[in-house]
Image (cartoon, rainbow, N blue to C red; front, side):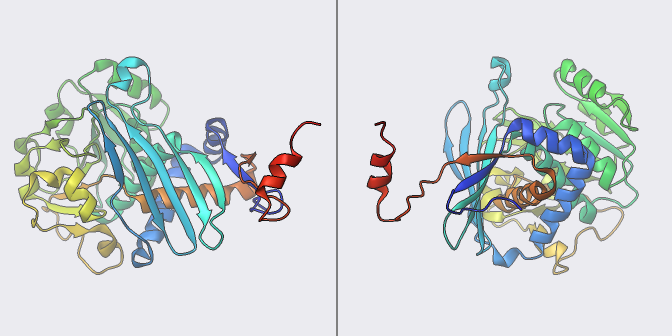
Length: 350
């Protein structure tokens, strides 16, 4: 059993090392597939969740955000940053940690690293959406932006969607070389491309995942053809986009939570009333996804709190069998709940 708050008030903590142990035990691709199933199951009960756009603190250097949600029984949040300049400093662009807590007592039941888990969750969300939006015959994916997320996306799409070829492009050739090396032995055919236009040639799925915090045109309108699915996962804050506006006007657009996506996603470039479809409606059968072979589908993903909630609950369940956690003494638990002062005094050295 996973420790629950009790007389000891110990909270399971999953460190970076614990998470890496868990991921390697289950397998990267398998864990992405498992989390995709978990996220989809929670999308099917979307109305049960408290939903709010993430709470950001923006600066010139980046953003720090809190992403909270609850299903009425369990509360969860993620702390996450996005600092594009960190790479030049030798730091991660994105780091994160997350918490689950019981709604009835307010006691936390899990504290976990989420830098690694967010990479898995992002890939899981992408492939979950692609199950409903990408061409069923998709076998080739273009990956524009070959940073920290690249390999997770490639392995997730291979496992869940069945792609067998990934075409890589990054403005930094070293990033492409890194990704190609890491994907050796994966069974994927890896093609290193010199331009974004070269990368998207012949691709059924286009994934854009760049980090710079600016309005950018990673994909121009002429690069996108009929029948392609675009997985736009790099635009995640006000003032940052990756796609030319004309691509959006030709696409059927699917989003996680419109009040957040209209602030942070690709659709911030469109009129506020431009029609979009919420992904949960497609998953529940209340709205159409891909309807014909020539349709251009666009998943304008910015990441939403329910997806992190799903990933944290998945990890929480894995602890029963894998034991990859440490106990943290982080909740004060006096014998008499009214006598916190006495507990502190009794801990004083004699």
